Each structure stands twice: as structure tokens, then as C-alpha cells.
Length: 161
Image (tube, rainbow, N blue to C red; front, top):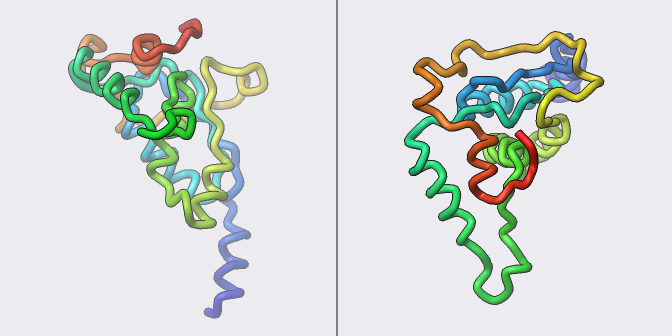
């Protein structure tokens, strides 16, 4: 099979370019993002809804402190040059997925363009079927986790949860 046939096979895969709506409610952030990045690399368009309800595992105070420590990192010469730290839940999730795709390769760039992350559920996605990942769901009580909306509030997000 030569390169042209392989490329043609990739573009005619029925699983590709399908819109998948993922509900992030009560999912662990890292597991959710790894599943989403895998779907993106397979060629699907993925929309993650309820990003403020995605959970981060660990001690609440330590998680918030680690995010606040990341905010301290800036350019020595001029902080306006970056790095820029996301404070909204949807942009935090977007950056997490970006770290899981090969963002400098063409396949990763194309995959990242197919990602959409929303706070809440937008009107155009309300009546679509939502997919959840059972192995990404939280297994303990909610008190063992902190939601991404709460983390975002603590690091400076002024939005409404």
C-alpha cells in the first residue's frame, strides 16, 4: 500500500469528522483530556460542555496552591511577553488538551482546531446526544475533589459558576 492509498483510506474513515459532544460533569480532568485528545487525533470534532464541573483530584488546598504557583512564572525582562496563564475553566481544559496533542506537528495543529470547550451547555448543543467516559468519572465522594470552576475562582476568574 503506497502513501496515496493510505492517505485516501484515512480520509474515507466513517468515524472521522463526526461531532462528538462530551459532558465533563464529574469527570477527572486528566483522564477526560486524554480521551478527548485521542478522539481529536482520530479526526473527530469534539465539543466539551460543562467545563466548570470537571473535577481535579487531590487535596483542595494543594491544588489551588499549585495553580497559584504557576501564576508566579513570568518573563524576567518584561512580563507582557508571557507566558500567559489561563484563568477560565474552558481555557484551562483547552490548555490541558493542547499539552496532550503534538501541537507543533501538522496533525496536532489540525486536531487542536477541531476542539471546542464551553462553560455550561450552549443552545446549539442542548438537544445533541452527550457522551461520557465511564473510566474518567470520579470514583470517590465529591469531597475528595475540587471542581475546575472553584479552582478558576481561586486563581482570579470573575465569571459565574
